[in-house]
Length: 84
Image 1 (cartoon, rainbow, N blue to C red):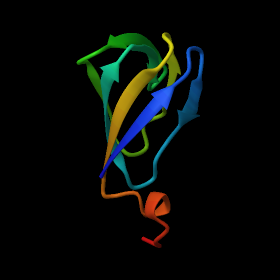
Image 2 (cartoon, rainbow, N blue to C red; image 1 turned 120 degrees about the vertical axis):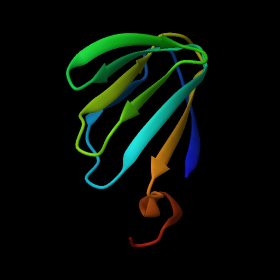
Image 3 (tube, rainbow, N blue to C red; image 1 turned 180 degrees about the vertical axis):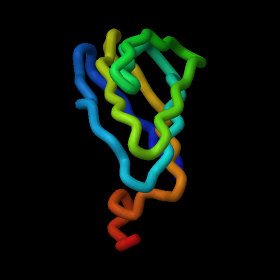
Image 4 (cartoon, rainbow, N blue to C red; image 1 turned 30 degrees about the vertical axis):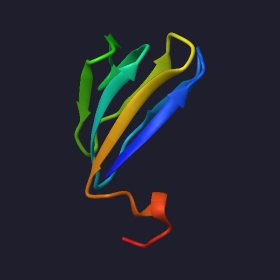
C-alpha cells in the first residue's frame, strides 16, 4: 500500500512504531530529518528509509512542501476503514 504525504516546513511525524507493518518511505520532494531506531539522519529527494515492524521512527520536514511516499506491508487497514 502506498500513501503520498505532503508536509509543511517544520512539520513533525512523531516517533512511533508499527506492530505488524514494515514501512518503506521514499522522499519525493524536499528533505527530512529522520529518526530511525534513535539515529538521526537527513534524507533528500530520491533517498529512502526502511522501518521494519517494531522499529521506532519519525520525521521532521526541513523544507516547505516536502513529500514522502510511504509504503506499507501489509496494507494499512486503518487507512481504508477496514479491520485487519
